[in-house]
Length: 194
Image 1 (tube, rainbow, N blue to C red):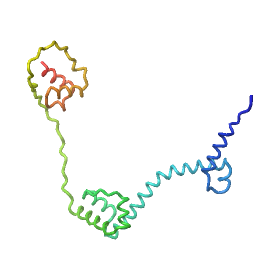
Image 2: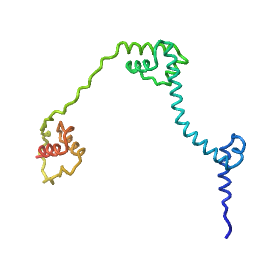
Image 3: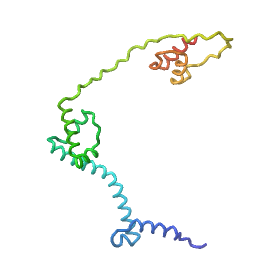
């Protein structure tokens, strides 16, 4: 049996790695083994630095915003707090761009933040919601003209899901069913079916 070396695939793989190693210095560019090691390392660096790029840009934006804030007698943290109080939604990237390229607009934003800090909006305290007893309202569906009634098979409501029971209650014209539990829904529907 002839020996199979799979040289075509091997050559393609090596060419691919050497192509990725283009621009490296010395044997890292020409020899497959060292080139492969360097390409693997560079891929790890790429993966790590894609994450770090986001952090570094955020740090750069904050530094630029802080420098512009100091020119307007303010701190970075005060500016961000004031803008939040004033309900101004501008991200740090845009703020940094304004700080560098449009100082007048940035000054207006700092003035808005200062005003919001001096006159904070009144806090609205959230009151805890207490669940009150829901009154069952029994309503009869609108009467339709008498038609010959066929004996109906009894429907097993307890086997249905809550959403199906709510649909049935809605079709029957009942109110106050949205906050009821399954057992309460079954009782309400059975009481109105009779």
